Length: 186
Image (cartoon, rainbow, N blue to C red):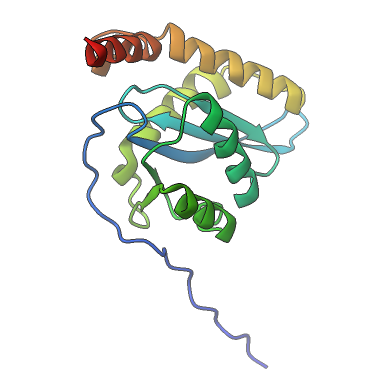
């Protein structure tokens, strides 16, 4: 008996070139970063960045994050920051899950997937993940999941409030967002 080869899962959305975001909540980029606790147990971090303000609305840390979990996270963020007009991500199973796709459709969120094997299609999140790994994950030892959540949240707050960005004229993301909001009102 021979095993049947299953067809590869293909993305369900059209892939288009990345255009710059031009206001807050225009586009969020999402991706996963993996690390481990000192015990060797794996953890998964969902990073979410606003492509315009470079703010991190959330970094979710868990042992596993499913499509249902993604929906719950977006529903929580909806009341805090609002939802984006579009989400840019890779073709991971969490982003291709029925629960996530249906939620985005029901909320009017356009999904933009990167081409397989082309992480540069989503350069904003890849750049963030490199900084996150260098400045947080590689600098910390996580004793347990709660310790990891606490340290990651502390880094996220530092990143949003204090860390200057050359792409934001040397401002921290929250300060840049405040200035943009003021500029739009004036």
